[in-house]
Length: 386
Image 1 (spheres, rainbow, N blue to C red):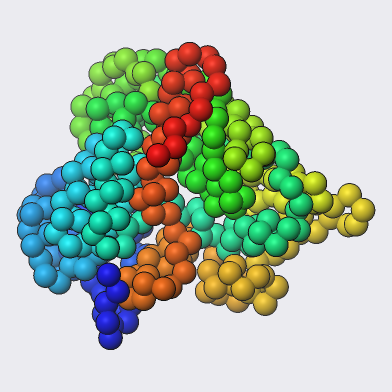
Image 2: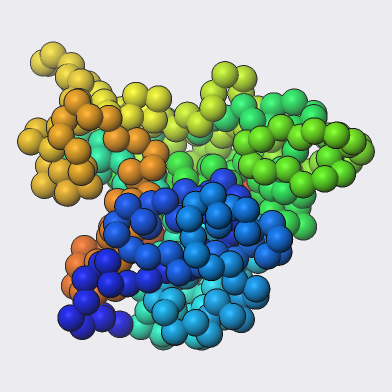
């Protein structure tokens, strides 16, 4: 549903969720020159200090008030996972474009419904897989697409963090009622899987998974705890069933094979994503800890490290970069680049759509289903395809 005679700054947004990632949404939206009309938190009392800190002028008293506000063109949903389905559904029915944090919903039945509703609405719909929008990741995709790597044979990768590595670490994602049955895989593994699909152009067809809970009992704080922040005060022991880590063997529809590790209990790794693609002609590797560098490996020529510089990148990768070479771009810029693509698509239905849509969000939910079934049965499981 393109919006005629308007530019990106003419659009207005509202953000649901005032935790760590909600703040990132607000700041990235503003960097595009887009006004954030207001925010919605778990309560006005908890949201108001965040709104004041960020300089957002309005705190919505309810989700209904947010959706009824005619100024709001786009709703960014950064609430706990179990709220996504109903909030997305209501936003689409209210005629709002939607950017939803992953996972799109906690079951594939819900993501299927949201996908069909989004398709029928004509509205722009995106899942917040920001890892697609690092310029060196886009460069890797361009080199795969132009055949530089030949046939992709082996994909290795990992996503590792340490913020839940001790039994006193707690976050709402640990609770299956709020976060869903999968934790490390759904929370960060989904980013890795989506990024690999984006770079290679291949989709997951089969998985062999082992889910690992190293801390079956944790100390849950009696008060609220924000993401990536330690708890203070009284705690109580609770049983935990969600995964601290996972190992995955993966088959892709283009013939590639994958070996992936996902962990939220790896000491010293704050937020480390990395992958390597081994092709029949060359290899390529990238890691978020060296976000500006792309390694290209060759057998009959010297290996190369390509440092981010718009003048040296493909047209697609250069379009993601906004600063000259030598001026480091990282995590926050990937959000800005994603939202720039979303908002341009709202204004121009023919603008490039490299961001993940609800079609991707539903496919990811089907992959999560297969991972759960594989872990339960200790066997290879095929991913369902609609």
